Image (cartoon, rainbow, N blue to C red):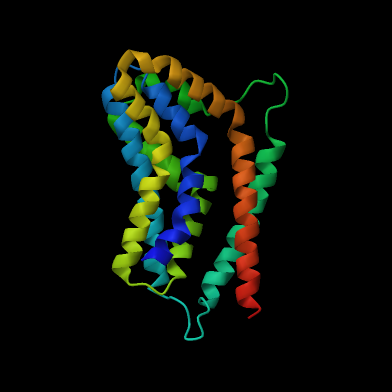
Amino acid sequence: MGEAIGQILPYGVAVALSAFPIVGVVLMLATPRARTNGPAMLLGWALGLALVGTIVLLVSGGAGPSEQGQPADWVSALDLALGVLLLWVAVKEWRGRPRGDEEVTLPKWMKTVDSFTPVKALAVGTALSAVNPKNLLLSIAAASAIARTDTSAGTQAVALAVYVVLGSLGPGTPLVLYFALRERSKHILDGLKLWMERNNTVIMAVICLIFAAKLVGDAISDLSS
């Protein structure tokens, strides 16, 4: 179990640092439906992470390492493809970073959070984790890393659960602050929102570049063995 959990720890941290779900939760906490929409979005985010991971593990069919200790060829090929895609995302994010006093462009849905219902908040949270390309690629890579280990289905499920919990710490933090500090949390949350908006592209570019290098390196090593 330790091997499987160890494989997904960096991916969980990387997904937790995704800015838009954090900013989205902060925005919803400033609306009249804060107490329902905030938790609904977090739940949707966690469900999306779990859904993607579960699909990858089911498709893998429990295919673990070969008798020689090497992962199945399809796993290595998937890692190579994911690495190349993450490299492309890293370049795209870096080129799109705000420069100087340039205004940060936010998704259109963030301008309509005041009208969100809990169901819509849940749907947006799920879409951000299961459909957004950056988070989708990282979740697939995390599940692929679990599939590489020679562990039982139950152990893989536990590792996936740990990944979901870690990946939910980012958008979950504003909720904890909101319910723990009440009105005193507003200044902290506003500062967090502004910082994440400004630094999102750079953070994601660095994260994607690091994981791209890791995945491509592992895939080349495995395929050439």
